[in-house]
Image (cartoon, rainbow, N blue to C red):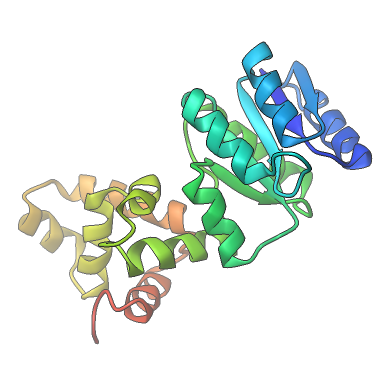
Length: 213
């Protein structure tokens, strides 16, 4: 697997490079020191994944992600940032990044994120997932593109049904699908939004006016 790292701080870039090359599944690392160079080297080397720092000279990570994703939609982009405000996260999601991780993340989490993106999955965890879910589900009518990037229409519908108190077999009957299909959707919802149990799902749905109790 070939990974492009775009990071303007040498020590951080070296740390990421060593981490990746010692992972056992990344065999080549391409380096860029700014957003413009990241775009140019993506064109030149066609990496399997691009890791972008949020704040860089010339093109920042958001601009670079937007350009790379528009030109190479099959190459996933992973935002690596020290900034974790909702504004920063949503800017990255709108630029169509497939994952967002902190520079302070554990090395195993960073590698898991890269593995996930390499097989077509996304990586939005913890507070990042919460920001995205609030924005997508709380404003579904206004943010269909954001919602489509995180949850399917069926998953969004199931959140409301589960939060209203319906059981899996009841939802299956209502939607005319199998109970197993309902459980698979539920599992996917929990993974995408970082829920650990039904109580968290219900609290989230109520907080975002998806249901009223």
